[in-house]
Length: 298
Ligand SMILES: Nc1ncnc2c1ncn2[C@@H]1O[C@H](COP(=O)(O)OP(=O)(O)OP(=O)(O)O)[C@@H](O)[C@H]1O
Image (cartoon, rainbow, N blue to C red; front, side, top):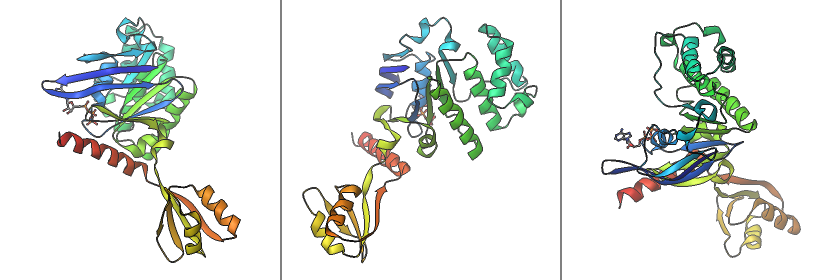
């Protein structure tokens, strides 16, 4: 588990992370989202003690990270722009990490297999594609068989196959009971991978929700032979009915089920009854756009 508690970071006069609190639970993939510059990388660096907060703190599995005696077992991380010596091979890169943490050679081979790099284990990492580099970074994060895995933009630049591979890997790790957290600035990527969403803008928490709850229902599209009769039937406090075509209505404030039951009770034929969901990407843009406006008008 990762518990972020009232975390604040300032660079000079600028507050880049502002009293941010959230929990990434075991057994779940938590997507950490925000537009460029929102403070995601800074938060992740503070989680593993690479940056010091102005105030607030972080607990990893109930303890401060600094007090951990086997940090690679506690949390595995892939941070952006991870330094790798281009002249090293994949296996030597992982072996050097393993040796300094008392991890066996067989575990190095295991993680290379896990990320699909066994065949190129003896190639220089300088010749790796972006996707292979990301896989190697993920292998390093998994080396200590950690209970918590935190990855900064792991699907950045990956092709659709690569995104699918990351998704299967991370959902598999969560299913084993691990805490998995990944950051991205793209809702479309995260919604495919994460269950839980933590969304920030300008360092502040904007939403702590699930992918399912984040999609706001705009209304129910109804196609019927008797739109006027149906409109009278379902009208009431909180229900808005808009005519969107000759036989079409958009109904807000009630559910498809209620509309269907009301129509059936009167014998009104329905040709279509469809909840209309706003796209996740649109909902994300609306949310973060508002945060920017709020900041600008202060
Ligand atoms: N070392 C630093 N000195 C000064 N400002 C910094 C430093 N590191 C980050 N910042 C600023 O802090 C803010 C948050 O940056 P951060 O990299 O955490 O955002 P992010 O959400 O990870 O963005 P991206 O998606 O672009 O990586 C930005 O305005 C950035 O310019």
